[in-house]
Length: 122
Ligand SMILES: [Zn+2]
Image (cartoon, rainbow, N blue to C red):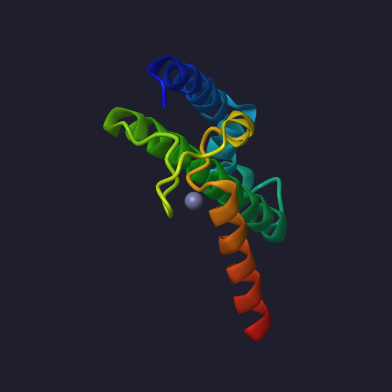
């Protein structure tokens, strides 16, 4: 991939990263985790619910952060935009929609098909 294209995607990833880390959800989660202060005003079940919701949120946000950092690391290594399965270039349109994509469309579909197939067997 051309370096100016990589630079464009790098900007997109960094913007996405800033959005994730500064999002209100992220800040709220920090509050929700300190259930000690809330315990007086909330019954246990709603405190537990808030905590489990915040943990789910944390998982999602952390996963996004990891994907973004992976993408940035792949830029450093010069492998950004290459499919992790077949090493072909990932479609540009696909990267534009999802700069954290690590598989080309074909491999992604194959992976999803495989996952669905496994679910059906289980
Ligand atoms: Zn591929």
